Structures are given as structure tokens and as C-alpha cells.
Image (tube, rainbow, N blue to C red; front, side, top):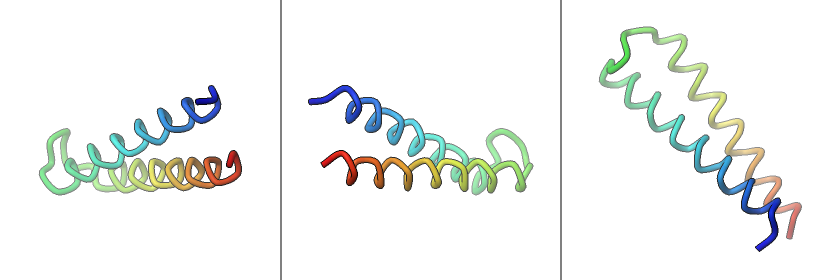
Length: 60
């Protein structure tokens, strides 16, 4: 596998974990009740996931 694909998959994995972590925080309030921060981190992680998918399609 090419290095670019490995790095892209790793970045997508980290972005997915960030989305999941802050979604759980939004629901359960693990780190506090800062809703704006949770939503912004979820949107940022979702954007990185989308960019990763587009990059994987382009690397084919």
C-alpha cells in the first residue's frame, strides 16, 4: 500500500474518533456542557472525514 493512502486512512481514523468522542460528550456531558465547542469539533472532524474520502477516490 502506498504511503499516501496509509496517512489518509490514519487521518480519517483520528477524525472519526474525534467525531465520536465529541458526539458522546454532546450527549453525556463528559468534559462539561460546552455545546458550541462540541458542535464545532464534530463539524471539523466530519470535514476531515469528507476530505479523506475525496482524497482516497482521487488516489485510485
